[in-house]
Image (cartoon, rainbow, N blue to C red; front, side, top):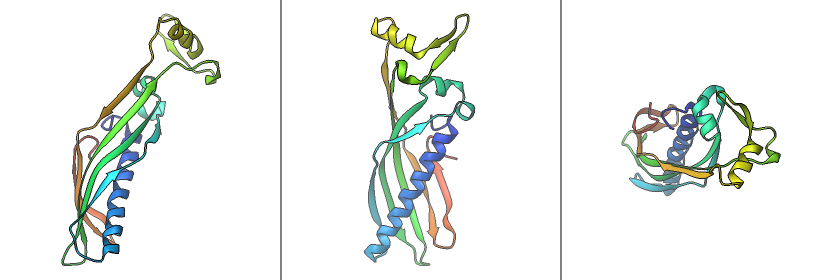
Amino acid sequence: MLNSVDGFRSDTETQQQNFIQTAILRAEEEGGSGPYTFPVTTAWSQHTGNQDEDGMDWFYDSGSWEYSHTGEVTVAREDDGSWSYDMETQVHMRDQYDWHGADAGGLGVTLPFIGVVKDEELAELARAGLAQEYTMYGTSDPVTRSGSYTPDEGLSGESSSGPGAR
């Protein structure tokens, strides 16, 4: 998902940059040069897909999902006053794939040779045991980022690897 859903990748990158900047601020409060290692554990955040931007597959497969991060950030002050950082995190996602009832506001799907099938009809099939709801979940391979930070330039010289890395 990190490689194929641009909006999701962008959201996770923004959060990862915030982890790095927060770690540097916390290290500055400590007053030393480090290295300092800080754990990363976030609450679940919501990502809502966009049919036009994300494509039909992810939009119809999930629509929206929750995600969180775990990992750690290590920062150290360099002799020139800049900060270096190394971060390794994993992204976790989950989504209950379910059919919505009458309160869904006209959700549905267009099936070839059948036409529009409303979510309410699919919910009835699930209640009758003819359609199935399930939970989608997964964890990314580690995402690593390293680079430097100065107040004038912000985060720079970054190298990154893992899913969604640019």
